[in-house]
Length: 471
Image (tube, rainbow, N blue to C red; front, top):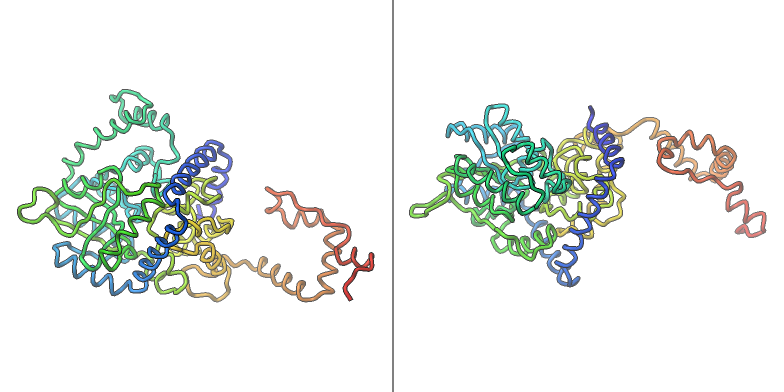
């Protein structure tokens, strides 16, 4: 199925499911309330947001230099750096590292980049077992689903669904619907896997070029276990996550966790600068960093769309989006749903494949109001919409692929009509006299809306009849 058709099908199914609307509305309301309480002072929020935006914008503007600096300092610290132009390149790199250690099990911390790579399926097809250790990711992996949210992957499931899933997959576990008991069950199931797996994999929230440090933000401690117990740690990272200095991290961390979960500080903040050194009691013997491009360099080259790369994956835009809150994440094709996904995914996959995503927005601006790094999401979505139908555009993969001759003809007629008063008045008179024809012409639009019935007389005619026409 073409991904545009897949998206329309997903939207129809989500809109027709009252459980999805009820669940997401309640949980988005909770996340929005927690974020509001985390930023009680508007002036402090504005100041912190300006600082974070400046850091991220500066990092993106100097991306090639900072990546070279990061590679140099990581290498000097003993971290092995691998460059991957595509998702397949990154998957092959991870597989080769595991094969070099004769590893058949991979324990994973949360990583949206590994989701983008399709790493689990890639390794499974080569006989390697991948286990998600983040609780939300663990749940959706058991269910055979994709994450529905970038911060809370299983946000679409309630405790009853999780309880039934655990009982189905682990019949020996006692059935319970208590959240603490379910969490304890998952912890016991996962604990031994951290000791059995010889390779652990995580994402990276920020990488510091100045020191060659990888920063991981988490709340459950599974990321720390993935990076300390296995003999080998592989970190996968989109090339845009680099920042220049260690001093850039505090404001970014501050605004990230408050925007994402409403916490004043995250439970665990991990800083990894090297493999285990002599005399240290824990930590991996090897650390590998896989830097994934996968279309990001093309985004970087566009001086307007490069703002997309500022994203710190907090999920605030999703929580406040009236479209996402009614559809949930599974209606969206691609890895990342919501407003930032509608912006990022078409630039990576091409407008010919995911060009419908930028239209999944009311352009209300709620996403840009809460974005902690000032990404003008509605403006950039409009840019992608224009690129999709622009004749002769060569900037983005798939540009012009959504241009349709009939639609272009209609808009050409509209332009001609609106610039020629006589034709405009004639068209209005014609429309007023044939409302049923209009209904047929606008069939797709009227399937979910009531078409306004044109007035019998236009405002110009009424004013003229009353002697109020402007001289």
